[in-house]
Image (tube, rainbow, N blue to C red; front, side, top):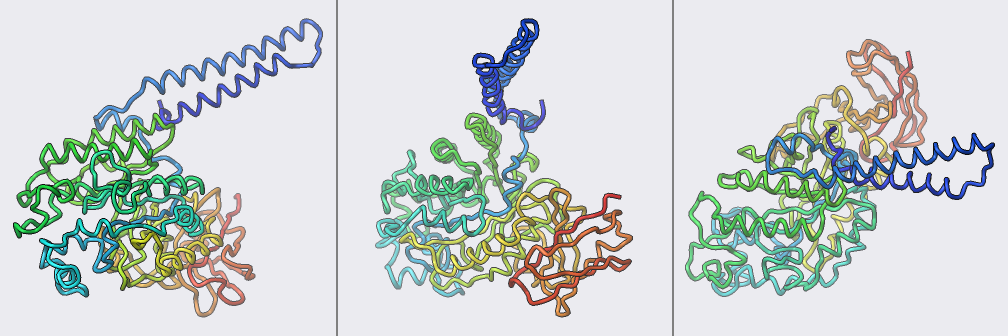
Length: 539
C-alpha cells in the first residue's frame, strides 16, 4: 500500500459509490434503444462497471476501517506522509492570545517573570518590579487575579478570519494553552478555561468555525508541557504555593526533575481533549516534549492523532521543534524552527514560526515591529527551501488586533495577491537561490540575518514554470540571474520566455554566459520582492 492511501480510503469510497450510483441510474433510466443483442450487451456492460465500482468502494471501506496506526515508529512510518495541503499552503497565522495580554508588558512570559526577580531584569517594564508597582506582591495579587480582567468583550471571530484571509493565509493556529496553564478552549480537564472564566465563551470554537468558513485550515498549539516547572515557588506566601491554585500553577517541583505520571496523565487528557473537540488539521507543540521523561508519550500521541485523521478522513500535520533531544523521528512529523530558518533546501517539509514583533509573541503596548518587506523576504526564502511560514500576531485582552499588526498582514496579503503564483503550491527548484546575503540556520537565529539586496534571488517552480524572485530592485533596473547562464549547471534548456509577474512593466531579456539579464522599464510596482515567470524551450 502506498503512503497516504489509508487517509484517502474514505474519499475513494465516496467517489466509487457515486460512480456506481450514476451507472446504476443510467441503467435504470436509459431511453436509448438498441437491437436486442446490442441492448443486452449494453446493459451487461453498465451493470459490470457499476458492480466494479461498488466492489472497489467496499474494499477501500473495509481497509479504512481495519487499518490503524500503532504506537510504534515503524507502523507510523509505513503509512504516513505529510499531506499535500500543507506543502501547498506556505503561509499561516499564529496567535498568542491569552490572560498575559491583560498587563500587556514585557512579553507573553510575564506570568513567569512576576515570580522570578532575575527574569528580563534589564529590560523595560521588568515584570518582577512592574507587577509589584502596579498590582502588588504576588501574595496579594498573583497571575490568577488577571483572569477576570481577560474579557475578550470585543472579540469578533469572523472579523479575525476575514483579516487572515486577506493576508493570504491558508491556515491559522491559535495557542490552545500556553505555559501559564490557562486553557484557551472549553477544556473538560481544568476549570481555568476560557469558557468557564474570563470571556466565558468558547472562543476557540468560534474561531475554528470562522476560519474554516473562509476556506482556511485550522490548527491548535500546545505549550502545556512546560507548565509543571514554569512558576517559581520561592516565597511560601505566593499563590504559586497555595494548593487551591495548583490546578493552574501546578505543584512545586525539583529543578530538572522529570514529569510525574500524574502530570503526564493530565497533559494527555488535555491534549486529547483538544484533538477530540476541535479536530485540528494541524497540531503544534512547543519546546518541552523533547525533555527527559516525555519519551513514553511520543508514539502514543502521534499514533492517536494520526488515527483521528483517518477517522476524520483528512490529512493532518503534527509539528514539533526537536530542540535538544530528538523527540520524534523527523520523517514522521513536520519540523518547526522558532525564529530561524534553513540555510539550504530541506528534502522534508518544514516550517518557521516567527512573529511580527521582535521581542514578544503576545500583545505588549510598546511592541517593536518588523517591516512587511522583511517578512515577505523571509516568506520567500523559506518557501524556496521547501518550508512554510507561520507568522504570529498578539491580540489585545479585549479581543481586538493592534492596528500595526493588521497593517503588516494586509501589506503581506497585497503582495501575495499580486505574486502568489510564485508561492502557493510551488516546490523548490534545483537550487534555492543565489546572492551575497547568507542565512543563518537554526532556532533563534533570525537576528543574525542581514537585509537582502537586489542580487539576492530565490527560486520556486510549479507546472513547468520557474519563478525567479529578486529580493530587491536594482538601481539600473537590470535584474541579473547567474544561475540561468547559457551554460548553466542547473538548466540545460534555453530560456524561451520571461514575464514580469509583479507588474505591467515591459521587460527585455538576454541570456548569455554570464547569466540571464532582465531589464524592466518604469518604476517599482510594489515595495517588496519582484517576481519573474520563466519558461524554457522544449528542446
